[in-house]
Length: 151
Image 1 (cartoon, rainbow, N blue to C red):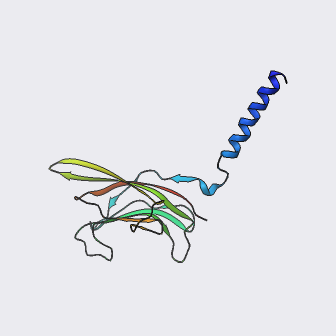
Image 2 (cartoon, rainbow, N blue to C red; image 1 turned 30 degrees about the vertical axis):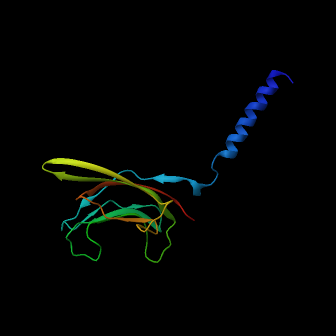
Image 3 (cartoon, helix red, strand yellow; image 1 turned 90 degrees about the vertical axis):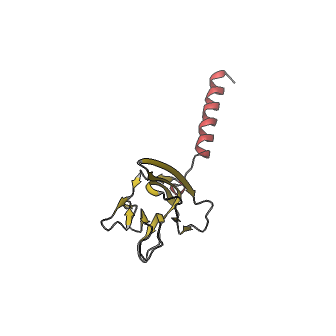
């Protein structure tokens, strides 16, 4: 064989190997939200992130219940992840959630970041939604949610 045929065969082999190794299904693609900032409500009982609607069955959002609040939810708890609409089955699930916390002490602001993975689900994950109690008076500042299609 001459050199041109060998080079063409090598290029074809590399291209076919690359196509074979590339993901072919949309179900394997992971999507990412931008920073979803927690904003306090009028009553100063909750902080909510903006809700992102993925499709007609699933939305992404977060909520923080402040300490010492009389509520149906547990005080000092962060809820972040994918939610399904009433009676519907969620099409997407959170796979990774990054939450940045902040607290102010004597005029100084301190930040802390915590990352949660769904591939090792623990008791804090419920149907793709994370439930977490921050420690040391940290409150959520923003979150980033990674999610993928489960159906």
